Length: 53
Image (cartoon, rainbow, N blue to C red; front, side, top):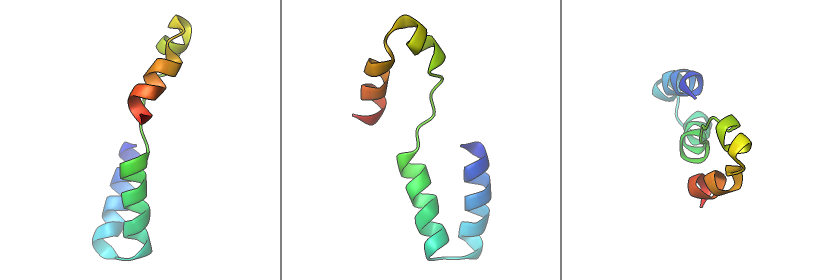
């Protein structure tokens, strides 16, 4: 996510329109989570519900 923020934020400052829309979509819709611990515990479904509602 840091990579996307860096690249898209750089282009967002330079361009408007579609790049800004893509940036806003990524920032507002992508979530990062280390799923392995939840998968091992069997609680991944609950964590996904917490993140995405």
